[in-house]
Each structure stands twice: as structure tokens, then as C-alpha cells.
Image (cartoon, rainbow, N blue to C red; front, side, top):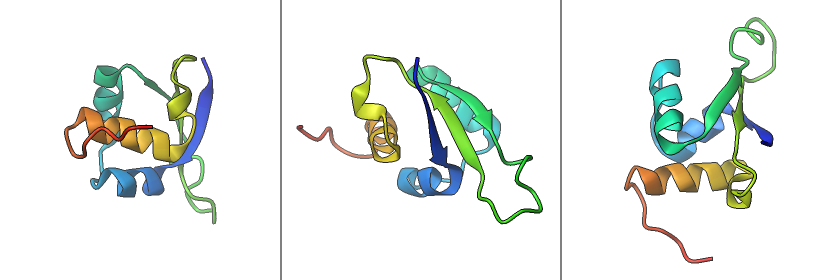
Length: 85
């Protein structure tokens, strides 16, 4: 499975909510993706922004970018309509 690194704050902004680690892990589990790594602790005290490394199923090519992940999760949460491609 491919692992996609996304900026944590940018993803949460696109989702319209700040999640705790447990809340976001549970959301991903329910949706069928997995958070492989959260770099929040590693970047404390540096200028780097935290990233989430998310494992995406190989057949979900629509989720290989931050916008695709956000759109899929927002659709799952009924926060936006399904967009035709």
C-alpha cells in the first residue's frame, strides 16, 4: 500500500475540524485507511510542521493527495456531496 505524507494542520483545515490523535485514528479505521505515523512529537521545537503519513489502498488512486483524502473523508462524513469526476 502506498503511504502518503500530508501536512496535519492543512488536512484538518480541509476537513473543517481539529481532531485528537485518537479521533482521527478512529475515523481513518472506520473509513478503511490507516495512519502509519504522526510526526508531531518529532518536530517539536523545530520550524517543521507536523505531518501525517497515511496508508492508502492501492486501488484508491483518487486519494493519493491531500485534496483527495480530504474529499473522501468529507464525503464519508456527509459534509459534502460526492463530486463527479
